[in-house]
Length: 301
Image (cartoon, rainbow, N blue to C red):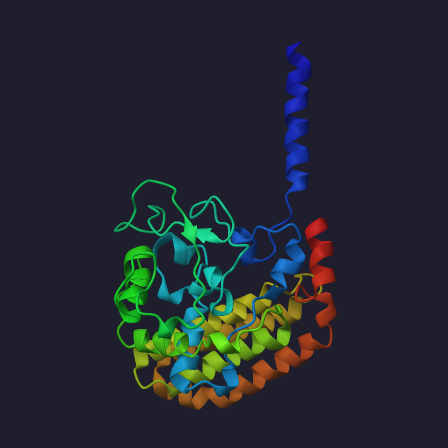
């Protein structure tokens, strides 16, 4: 009777492996949805128009959407503030086993992410909507007395990030733009154009910040945005385009190493090359993972 059981075990493993969709996008790691392709190509609408934001708010927006603010395993996993608070709203599909046992919630006292707050108990709480957060008088589940104390605590205590100095006012400037009266219930598609605009805005914001360490951090956020574009390009069909994106990322590293003078000299050429790279991709966007049908087919393979 043992032989059939030994034969059955590998078969069950094969069936289980076949049932798991391939890991194509970073966000899959924390996305739980019956329609994964739709969830990964749509997000809650942002309760503010980026084109109306100040330079400070755009800089904060870039930081909010990148892992550069966080530390520890969360940053290594690619988590950002935006992972839980998509476009400043609630990511109702968020489910990372290290941080929650149900979608749309997160354990703010997880030992995985925090040496300070970790309590060894899985006790997730609902992810709050940040729209209108500037009008509140108490913040988070600990009812912090100010938005500044709350955000600093999330970055430093909850996720082991470096203590924010010049970057904190920028993040607060972004959060204060999220106007509850400007919210829409319609989901916003994640497209090549929106992803490219995020990179452009981050790159421009880095040039507007006078504090160079913070400017360099925003350039790193722009690099993260480049990575998010690259991962939506199927490797075989978009090999050259992925190489161009990688080259653009290396140029940003050179600018960060070279300081503000290097950024000022290289910026015009970099923007032109980035726009050209995006234009080449746009001709075949329907074959990228920005396209819901293309992503669904790839996840089903």
